[in-house]
Image 1 (cartoon, helix red, strand yellow):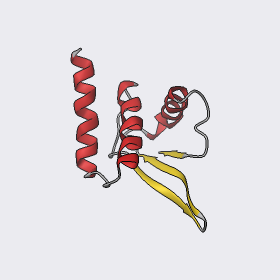
Image 2 (tube, helix red, strand yellow):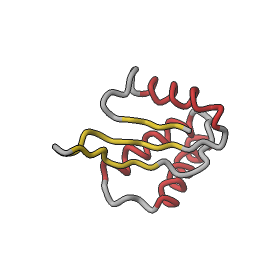
Image 3 (cartoon, one colour):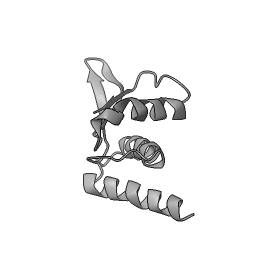
Image 4 (cartoon, helix red, strand yellow):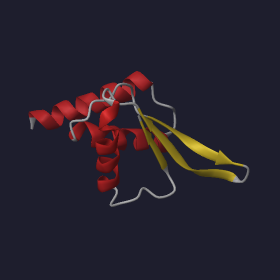
Length: 97
């Protein structure tokens, strides 16, 4: 139980540091990805950010950016995110570095 509360606090700290982007969908996407990584024991170097990807015809999905304390853990972070979503993430893009 202590671990779960610590995870929640860590996720909130990352979101608070980011200041929120003022969009529930983007904030939620960032929180979900941050939560996956924190629960997997993968340390974040910076708050997770999310933006809409745009095209001439409108939004084409969500672009989530993750910066890790240890970039060598990028494959493990990507695998944890893909596993959470049941395989490929689809039209959304997750950049892990």
